Length: 392
Image (cartoon, rainbow, N blue to C red; front, side, top):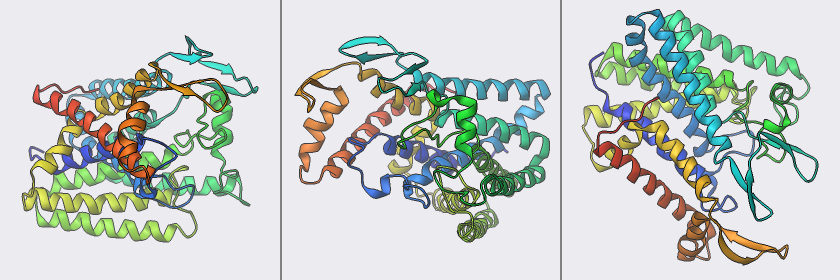
């Protein structure tokens, strides 16, 4: 329990850095394919980032839960419930922030729900990345607390198989398509159309309620991996075990994909198993090169500082663009004949990043994302230098 695994900190920090990178391109219209999510079935490098972070949450749970349980039942429940609620509310806060918006050249309050000019319901999205992290952390913690390692494994396997069964039972003719997946109807009924994500062209939430089951298991798998690492310690047996488990899960997920397609947007069971396999392989490699070979330096330090204030830096990466979007820089006249404006970050992309390689707009978009991640790293580095660690 007292062994320090620096590689786990680097792994967690790398996932946070990549989450910020893929969420902040210069232009959503100009993105290199590996930095985009798969349109529906399938997986891209970007589709690995979120499950890897949930896996890292589970790793951390393996080190923290024994201390909470040793402190007593009341301490465990107080800590888990408080942390889950705070993370969920921070996510909801970010979705509503900055509570005002531009409307016909006036700043007006951003309502909880409203009807748009074309008669559609809109409002503050209830779910999101942080909300999913909160729910997964809560349920995985409770399962691990009562079931320990064996019970957590059984519960995880049950959830994956049950989710597969429910998907098919709800719509045997077309269970895994965008229109046929059962979860959207439930999200709409419980949350209301105004509070559902609409980035897919219609009301569909990739972090909705029904697809949370597989994400919970992602945290459980991370917990099991972390528990194994603690039990075996810094040994060759531990690294080999992680590598073999990764290969088995990777192969299992690939086979399962034939009947239950790998799909991040509905977080299918095959996606959970496949991405966990990849996470185990990468984690085994990082443990080998960092803990055994001691190949560490500036590259590991870069990612490490992200991991020390992971949730705060991720929240800041969402707050800054939304806050600065209230500042409008004149940009001539739009196609509709009305005045057009840049936000400060959009101005930076158009006038600094994009002109670097004007013939390749995707390069300018990536340059902007790299500049943004460098700025976020600077904040993280400054906090680390001053020994400021903001934990929830």
